[in-house]
Length: 262
Image (cartoon, rainbow, N blue to C red; front, side, top):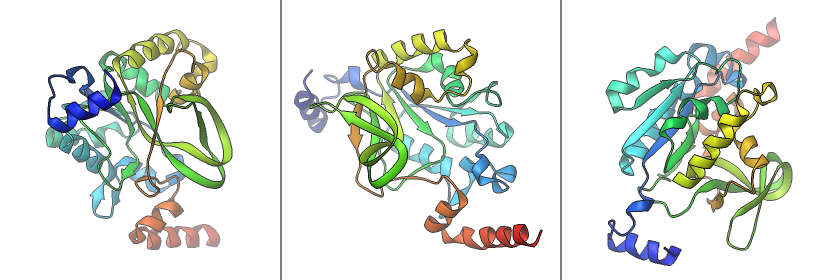
């Protein structure tokens, strides 16, 4: 089906015609330590921090639910017991990542590999200013925002129709990976094959899931999905969070005083 046909069916509500493009589920990765948020994250996992009155992961779960996503898998590791209340509150599936202490985020994908199909891949600490999810998606993509000036983010190059053809770490004035990704069944099947082959290798322990994708661009197709500035937010450290939610400023300042007085 051509993209304009898909969009026409979607606008008209002809969901039977686009049934193959219906989203099956979503994965939210929440297993990591968030060490750059220590000592705050030593008490509360980053995904469970309350930002502007909402717990971050709960906000994302509600946005997925509002978009009509039927199944949500939350992959946990660090302080996993703190996430189990989400099962009852939101009817999500909690999946434990047994390798979160020794491997990077590709291990969270490995933990849910049997569930991947038409799937959103999300990070629990993303904060979306508006709902970025849809119940039907035409093509697999990685969300991107434009970075002015120098950046150490993952910078994208694309061909004429938006297919990602090259990814490099660092650059300037570029569209960069940020936020969620969407995999269709073809992408998921091929990615899982590559992941299962790579997982036993010692040199892959520190690998991000994006690294495996970057190494296999000839086999794995994602398109760029561009978002305006400010829609997708990532808080890499406490200072960035303070800029967005000023309620954390007193905590940050008191922490700095404690460090300076030592």
